[in-house]
Length: 149
Image 1 (cartoon, rainbow, N blue to C red):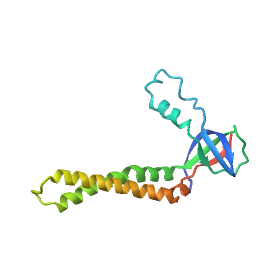
Image 2 (cartoon, helix red, strand yellow):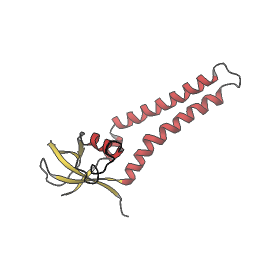
Image 3 (cartoon, rainbow, N blue to C red):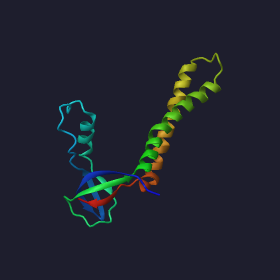
Image 4 (tube, rainbow, N blue to C red):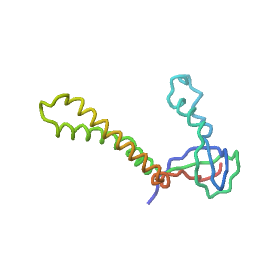
């Protein structure tokens, strides 16, 4: 079974307690076009370049090394589903439960349905945050250094 990986060029910015920290490397495909001001890839890249990320590495590295960092494509897809689809499902489920429980001529039914939808949404966001704080998601979704450039 072949594991599909998403790879990105990065630069080692810090090595601390056997932990390697990297920042997104230079992207040669962006920055040369005329749409730089309205390009979302350029805006996203400029934000990501400023954030250091811890990665796992079995390779001996030093600060300033350019490396290729990879993450499992399936893990990224599952994380996207978890962070985008699950809150949306909770939102609609909360609204559906309130609609089902309320009588047809209930006073302020729309407000109760909206409040229940918001409550379901906030509850699932809290549960996702709690799962992340327990390191359940961070342990499996760690990027790794695959090679030194």
